Length: 281
Image 1: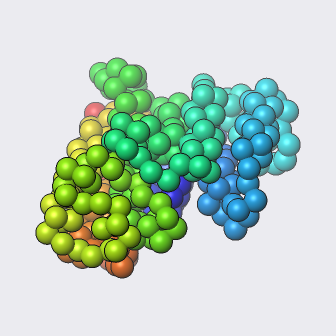
Image 2: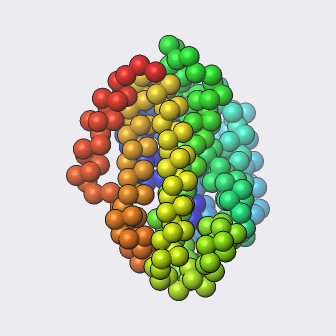
Protein backbone atom coordinates (compact mmCIF):
# COMPACT_ATOMS: atom_id res chain seq x y z
CA UNK A 1 0.00 0.00 0.00
CA UNK A 2 1.70 3.11 -1.18
CA UNK A 3 0.07 6.28 -2.37
CA UNK A 4 -2.75 5.72 -4.88
CA UNK A 5 -2.64 8.21 -7.74
CA UNK A 6 -5.95 7.13 -9.19
CA UNK A 7 -9.20 9.08 -8.82
CA UNK A 8 -8.24 12.21 -6.94
CA UNK A 9 -4.90 12.75 -8.69
CA UNK A 10 -6.58 12.15 -12.06
CA UNK A 11 -9.16 14.86 -11.34
CA UNK A 12 -6.45 17.16 -10.02
CA UNK A 13 -4.28 16.74 -13.11
CA UNK A 14 -7.23 16.89 -15.53
CA UNK A 15 -8.38 20.08 -13.84
CA UNK A 16 -5.11 21.79 -14.61
CA UNK A 17 -6.70 22.76 -17.95
CA UNK A 18 -8.07 25.73 -16.01
CA UNK A 19 -4.54 26.83 -15.05
CA UNK A 20 -1.95 28.79 -16.95
CA UNK A 21 0.20 26.61 -19.26
CA UNK A 22 3.21 27.10 -16.99
CA UNK A 23 1.38 25.93 -13.88
CA UNK A 24 -0.20 23.06 -15.78
CA UNK A 25 3.21 21.78 -16.89
CA UNK A 26 4.53 22.10 -13.34
CA UNK A 27 1.71 20.04 -11.80
CA UNK A 28 2.18 17.38 -14.47
CA UNK A 29 5.93 17.24 -13.78
CA UNK A 30 5.31 16.71 -10.06
CA UNK A 31 2.63 14.12 -10.78
CA UNK A 32 4.91 12.14 -13.10
CA UNK A 33 7.75 12.12 -10.55
CA UNK A 34 5.38 10.92 -7.80
CA UNK A 35 3.98 8.26 -10.10
CA UNK A 36 7.44 6.97 -11.01
CA UNK A 37 8.46 6.94 -7.35
CA UNK A 38 5.30 5.02 -6.43
CA UNK A 39 5.98 2.46 -9.18
CA UNK A 40 9.39 1.68 -7.67
CA UNK A 41 7.84 -0.18 -4.74
CA UNK A 42 4.31 -0.85 -5.99
CA UNK A 43 4.90 -1.57 -9.67
CA UNK A 44 5.70 -4.70 -11.70
CA UNK A 45 9.40 -4.61 -10.80
CA UNK A 46 8.91 -3.84 -7.10
CA UNK A 47 10.29 -7.21 -5.98
CA UNK A 48 13.69 -6.18 -7.35
CA UNK A 49 13.83 -2.81 -5.59
CA UNK A 50 16.38 -2.53 -2.77
CA UNK A 51 17.27 0.27 -0.33
CA UNK A 52 20.31 1.00 -2.52
CA UNK A 53 18.04 1.48 -5.53
CA UNK A 54 16.07 4.08 -3.57
CA UNK A 55 19.34 5.74 -2.55
CA UNK A 56 20.19 6.05 -6.25
CA UNK A 57 16.71 7.45 -6.94
CA UNK A 58 17.21 10.10 -4.24
CA UNK A 59 20.62 11.02 -5.68
CA UNK A 60 18.94 11.41 -9.05
CA UNK A 61 16.38 13.71 -7.39
CA UNK A 62 19.16 15.87 -5.94
CA UNK A 63 20.80 16.08 -9.35
CA UNK A 64 17.67 17.24 -11.12
CA UNK A 65 17.10 19.93 -8.46
CA UNK A 66 20.64 21.11 -9.21
CA UNK A 67 19.89 21.27 -12.93
CA UNK A 68 21.34 17.90 -13.96
CA UNK A 69 18.34 15.82 -15.11
CA UNK A 70 18.78 12.21 -16.29
CA UNK A 71 15.89 12.09 -18.77
CA UNK A 72 13.04 14.19 -20.14
CA UNK A 73 10.78 13.47 -17.15
CA UNK A 74 13.50 14.60 -14.75
CA UNK A 75 14.04 17.64 -16.99
CA UNK A 76 10.38 18.61 -16.61
CA UNK A 77 10.66 18.59 -12.81
CA UNK A 78 14.03 20.34 -12.98
CA UNK A 79 12.37 23.10 -15.02
CA UNK A 80 9.55 23.31 -12.48
CA UNK A 81 12.05 23.64 -9.63
CA UNK A 82 13.71 26.53 -11.46
CA UNK A 83 10.41 28.41 -11.97
CA UNK A 84 8.52 27.78 -8.74
CA UNK A 85 9.62 27.93 -5.09
CA UNK A 86 9.23 24.19 -4.51
CA UNK A 87 11.35 22.60 -1.81
CA UNK A 88 13.24 19.33 -2.31
CA UNK A 89 12.44 18.07 1.21
CA UNK A 90 8.92 16.70 0.56
CA UNK A 91 10.32 14.79 -2.43
CA UNK A 92 12.98 13.29 -0.19
CA UNK A 93 10.31 12.50 2.39
CA UNK A 94 8.23 10.63 -0.17
CA UNK A 95 11.27 8.51 -1.02
CA UNK A 96 11.61 7.79 2.71
CA UNK A 97 8.03 6.52 2.69
CA UNK A 98 8.97 4.11 -0.08
CA UNK A 99 11.85 2.86 2.07
CA UNK A 100 9.38 2.17 4.88
CA UNK A 101 7.29 0.00 2.59
CA UNK A 102 10.28 -2.22 1.86
CA UNK A 103 10.43 -3.50 5.43
CA UNK A 104 7.55 -2.25 7.57
CA UNK A 105 4.15 -3.97 7.45
CA UNK A 106 2.71 -3.06 10.88
CA UNK A 107 2.00 0.23 12.68
CA UNK A 108 1.70 0.13 16.44
CA UNK A 109 0.02 3.52 16.92
CA UNK A 110 -1.74 6.17 14.88
CA UNK A 111 1.30 8.43 15.32
CA UNK A 112 3.37 5.84 13.44
CA UNK A 113 0.71 5.52 10.77
CA UNK A 114 0.36 9.30 10.47
CA UNK A 115 4.07 9.62 9.73
CA UNK A 116 3.78 7.00 7.01
CA UNK A 117 0.75 8.80 5.54
CA UNK A 118 2.72 12.04 5.56
CA UNK A 119 5.64 10.45 3.74
CA UNK A 120 3.65 8.86 0.95
CA UNK A 121 0.76 11.33 0.54
CA UNK A 122 0.93 14.41 2.76
CA UNK A 123 4.11 15.37 0.92
CA UNK A 124 2.11 15.92 -2.28
CA UNK A 125 0.43 18.95 -0.72
CA UNK A 126 3.76 20.47 0.19
CA UNK A 127 5.01 19.83 -3.34
CA UNK A 128 2.06 21.40 -5.13
CA UNK A 129 0.98 24.43 -3.05
CA UNK A 130 3.85 26.58 -4.43
CA UNK A 131 2.51 25.82 -7.92
CA UNK A 132 -1.21 26.08 -7.06
CA UNK A 133 -0.48 29.29 -5.14
CA UNK A 134 -2.46 30.98 -2.41
CA UNK A 135 -5.19 33.40 -3.52
CA UNK A 136 -3.97 37.03 -3.52
CA UNK A 137 -7.09 38.11 -1.57
CA UNK A 138 -6.78 35.34 1.03
CA UNK A 139 -6.41 36.41 4.66
CA UNK A 140 -5.18 32.96 5.69
CA UNK A 141 -1.57 32.41 6.68
CA UNK A 142 0.65 30.38 4.37
CA UNK A 143 1.18 27.94 7.24
CA UNK A 144 -2.54 27.23 7.55
CA UNK A 145 -2.89 26.59 3.81
CA UNK A 146 0.09 24.23 3.82
CA UNK A 147 -1.36 22.44 6.85
CA UNK A 148 -4.65 22.02 4.98
CA UNK A 149 -2.80 20.59 1.97
CA UNK A 150 -1.06 18.17 4.32
CA UNK A 151 -4.43 17.22 5.84
CA UNK A 152 -5.78 16.41 2.38
CA UNK A 153 -2.90 14.03 1.73
CA UNK A 154 -3.43 12.35 5.11
CA UNK A 155 -7.18 12.06 4.49
CA UNK A 156 -6.64 10.54 1.05
CA UNK A 157 -4.15 8.00 2.34
CA UNK A 158 -6.31 7.01 5.30
CA UNK A 159 -9.15 6.49 2.84
CA UNK A 160 -6.90 4.29 0.68
CA UNK A 161 -6.00 2.26 3.74
CA UNK A 162 -9.61 1.76 4.86
CA UNK A 163 -10.70 0.84 1.34
CA UNK A 164 -7.87 -1.67 0.85
CA UNK A 165 -7.83 -3.54 4.18
CA UNK A 166 -8.62 -6.90 2.55
CA UNK A 167 -6.21 -6.42 -0.35
CA UNK A 168 -3.38 -5.43 1.98
CA UNK A 169 -4.04 -8.31 4.39
CA UNK A 170 -3.70 -10.77 1.53
CA UNK A 171 -0.21 -9.37 1.06
CA UNK A 172 0.52 -9.83 4.76
CA UNK A 173 0.20 -6.11 5.53
CA UNK A 174 -1.91 -4.27 8.10
CA UNK A 175 -1.99 -0.48 7.81
CA UNK A 176 -4.14 0.06 10.90
CA UNK A 177 -3.05 1.18 14.40
CA UNK A 178 -2.54 -2.07 16.30
CA UNK A 179 -3.20 -0.45 19.68
CA UNK A 180 -6.60 0.80 18.48
CA UNK A 181 -7.41 -2.63 17.08
CA UNK A 182 -6.62 -4.13 20.49
CA UNK A 183 -8.78 -1.54 22.27
CA UNK A 184 -11.65 -2.57 19.98
CA UNK A 185 -11.13 -6.21 20.95
CA UNK A 186 -9.68 -7.13 17.55
CA UNK A 187 -6.48 -8.95 16.62
CA UNK A 188 -4.32 -9.35 13.53
CA UNK A 189 -5.92 -12.76 13.07
CA UNK A 190 -9.33 -11.05 12.82
CA UNK A 191 -8.01 -8.96 9.93
CA UNK A 192 -6.64 -11.99 8.12
CA UNK A 193 -9.87 -13.90 8.76
CA UNK A 194 -11.76 -11.02 7.14
CA UNK A 195 -15.13 -11.40 8.84
CA UNK A 196 -17.36 -8.37 9.40
CA UNK A 197 -18.50 -8.33 13.04
CA UNK A 198 -20.06 -5.74 15.32
CA UNK A 199 -16.61 -5.10 16.79
CA UNK A 200 -15.26 -4.46 13.29
CA UNK A 201 -18.12 -2.12 12.42
CA UNK A 202 -17.52 -0.07 15.58
CA UNK A 203 -13.81 0.08 14.86
CA UNK A 204 -14.39 1.15 11.26
CA UNK A 205 -16.84 3.88 12.28
CA UNK A 206 -14.11 5.47 14.40
CA UNK A 207 -11.52 5.20 11.62
CA UNK A 208 -13.89 6.73 9.06
CA UNK A 209 -14.78 9.54 11.44
CA UNK A 210 -11.10 10.45 11.81
CA UNK A 211 -10.54 10.44 8.04
CA UNK A 212 -13.53 12.76 7.60
CA UNK A 213 -12.09 15.19 10.14
CA UNK A 214 -8.92 15.44 8.03
CA UNK A 215 -11.06 16.06 4.93
CA UNK A 216 -12.93 18.82 6.79
CA UNK A 217 -9.67 20.48 7.78
CA UNK A 218 -8.42 20.22 4.22
CA UNK A 219 -11.55 21.73 2.70
CA UNK A 220 -11.16 24.91 4.73
CA UNK A 221 -7.72 25.47 3.25
CA UNK A 222 -8.68 24.66 -0.34
CA UNK A 223 -10.81 27.80 -0.49
CA UNK A 224 -7.68 29.88 0.08
CA UNK A 225 -5.91 28.59 -3.02
CA UNK A 226 -5.72 30.66 -6.18
CA UNK A 227 -9.05 30.64 -8.05
CA UNK A 228 -7.67 28.59 -10.98
CA UNK A 229 -6.49 25.88 -8.60
CA UNK A 230 -9.49 25.58 -6.29
CA UNK A 231 -11.82 23.57 -8.52
CA UNK A 232 -9.57 20.57 -9.35
CA UNK A 233 -8.42 20.28 -5.73
CA UNK A 234 -11.93 20.61 -4.29
CA UNK A 235 -13.35 18.16 -6.83
CA UNK A 236 -10.68 15.60 -5.98
CA UNK A 237 -11.39 16.05 -2.27
CA UNK A 238 -15.15 15.57 -2.68
CA UNK A 239 -14.71 12.53 -4.92
CA UNK A 240 -12.28 10.77 -2.62
CA UNK A 241 -14.32 11.51 0.50
CA UNK A 242 -17.23 9.62 -1.09
CA UNK A 243 -15.20 6.40 -0.89
CA UNK A 244 -15.84 6.51 2.87
CA UNK A 245 -19.58 6.64 2.15
CA UNK A 246 -19.17 3.60 -0.11
CA UNK A 247 -17.43 1.65 2.68
CA UNK A 248 -20.41 2.37 4.92
CA UNK A 249 -22.81 1.35 2.13
CA UNK A 250 -20.94 -1.98 1.94
CA UNK A 251 -21.70 -2.53 5.65
CA UNK A 252 -17.99 -1.99 6.43
CA UNK A 253 -16.99 -5.04 4.40
CA UNK A 254 -13.65 -3.84 3.12
CA UNK A 255 -12.30 -7.39 3.23
CA UNK A 256 -13.97 -8.75 0.10
CA UNK A 257 -15.78 -5.71 -1.36
CA UNK A 258 -13.92 -2.78 -2.89
CA UNK A 259 -15.59 0.56 -2.20
CA UNK A 260 -15.79 2.79 -5.22
CA UNK A 261 -17.65 5.88 -6.41
CA UNK A 262 -19.81 5.34 -9.49
CA UNK A 263 -19.42 7.43 -12.62
CA UNK A 264 -22.76 9.16 -12.11
CA UNK A 265 -21.79 10.35 -8.63
CA UNK A 266 -18.41 11.50 -9.90
CA UNK A 267 -20.03 13.45 -12.72
CA UNK A 268 -22.54 15.11 -10.40
CA UNK A 269 -19.79 16.19 -8.00
CA UNK A 270 -17.86 18.20 -10.57
CA UNK A 271 -20.29 21.09 -11.24
CA UNK A 272 -21.09 21.38 -7.52
CA UNK A 273 -17.37 21.58 -6.73
CA UNK A 274 -16.93 24.16 -9.51
CA UNK A 275 -19.69 26.35 -8.07
CA UNK A 276 -18.24 26.11 -4.55
CA UNK A 277 -14.75 26.85 -5.80
CA UNK A 278 -15.96 29.99 -7.57
CA UNK A 279 -16.61 31.64 -4.21
CA UNK A 280 -13.96 33.95 -2.81
CA UNK A 281 -11.87 32.73 0.17
